[in-house]
Length: 149
Image (tube, rainbow, N blue to C red; front, side, top):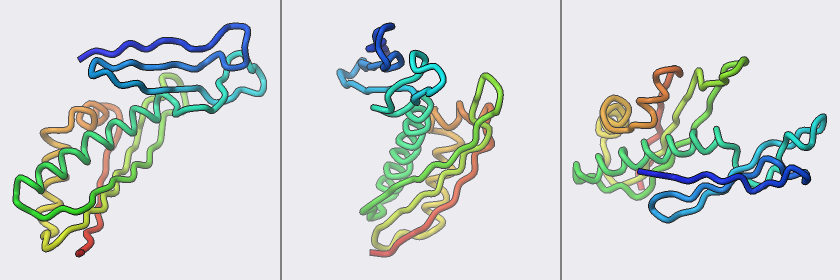
């Protein structure tokens, strides 16, 4: 796996903290910093997600992917799945994630709650590289709602 991240800003512009990531799979992801009123040259223009937001989003994508795949392999009729992540970060540098809560909403026909609970646990204990890695610094908790369609 590879990725090239390039600075898009110009030291002479207000948008000094924009970046574009080009992934090995050929996709592009934009990132930007938060505006800094005190030192505009050090901030972004709020034109894209912050880099740490992309880490959180990637973790959500990784675990949701696992949950759907595990449920489908169990022959459950999954129609929708989403995960809302909320987090806390350390106050001092490096401002690592210290707490992450993932709330899953799974919808489908006849999916037993224990199957959803098992899929989430398998993702976090075995398959989701991102959440397993973040668990080195963050307390990760989960919850879920199951909607019958």
